[in-house]
Image (cartoon, rainbow, N blue to C red; front, side, top):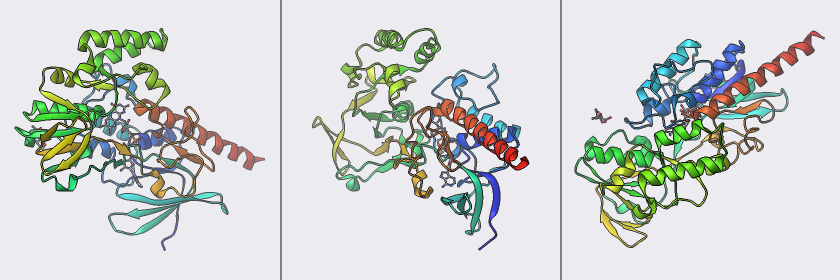
Length: 389
Ligand SMILES: Cc1cc2nc3c(=O)[nH]c(=O)nc-3n(C[C@H](O)[C@H](O)[C@H](O)COP(=O)(O)OP(=O)(O)OC[C@H]3O[C@@H](n4cnc5c(N)ncnc54)[C@H](O)[C@@H]3O)c2cc1C
Ligand SMILES: *[C@@H]1O[C@H](CO)[C@@H](O)[C@H](O)[C@H]1NC(C)=O
């Protein structure tokens, strides 16, 4: 076994949360190491998202600590534009993640009061070990695909992919494509398919709020001045004005308002960038849940059957933190997400932290990163003071 490497903080994951935490630690001159499984930083943005993706929220809600977007930057940034920003961020703080290093396990050693982090170097296949006082879990809420099982799916002869492997609709031109799941990804992929000349159908299983992106942006600017119930009423009124009754097109709205749900539950409204217009005009078909599949034939809950050439599963993601984080039953729940309630979700015991694991997007992970770095800084300063005495 190789000699163990020592550092103050091990950050697992070089996505936005890991990079933001590293930048904040750098500001305090605290030694740290970032370990990343993939061969690039921000792998979700580089490798697991579709071409036409734009940030769903306005730029001021999508920036990392200590580097605001310039005023020349558009309100809703494209994926490539955002990747350029992340690269600039890494250069600006001189961050050097160790790529192709997968954390296989991390556990707290009671005896010496430190974390032992076991890492597989995917380049050489060798195992390395780090010893650190602090560990930051920054492996994201979207590491693995959620793939539901449908009766008969194995008989489907066409392509079945998860939304993380979808890039654009060019190869689906003229094809019948079923998109399962109507979160932001599913809705936008259906639009993309339709724009590329495919015949898209989207499965809508639950009640949901669809809201136009720009409208949500303006309403959120009023958040400081008006109570949620008024904003919800205003938003729903304007949505009705733009869309009419969405239930007529197969999309039932929940009883509670979109902003109320957003603030009190993990349920976000679906941000519409043009899909609903295509649903209204009949270019995109909406159907209820899938009941069964036989060959190319898919049967839906309302007993309608339809033939498809391909299926895209926009059925969401899950965290993989529990696969490697051993013996912490305080901070991270079985689902790999923080089980402590916001705003106390980021700090565990024995120097364990998590950033970006409370379903609050880029805005949330940027806040987590600052709090974590400040907390570690305070603890280290206290230690120094004790040593002096
Ligand atoms: C398609 C899509 C669009 C989104 N758009 C927005 C938006 O517009 N606005 C917004 O606020 N939020 C958005 N989000 C939500 C969220 O803010 C982003 O997913 C954001 O990238 C999360 O960053 P993260 O660092 O927490 O996780 P990730 O970006 O997923 O980074 C985690 C990193 O950890 C690495 N990793 C995982 N396991 C290990 C391991 N064992 N060892 C080493 N490395 C590991 C992964 O390879 C990955 O690079 C979007 C999410 C998706 C999926
Ligand atoms: C669509 O994606 C493929 C595969 O990534 C790529 O080669 C092609 O250039 C893309 N087409 C368009 C029109 O963007």
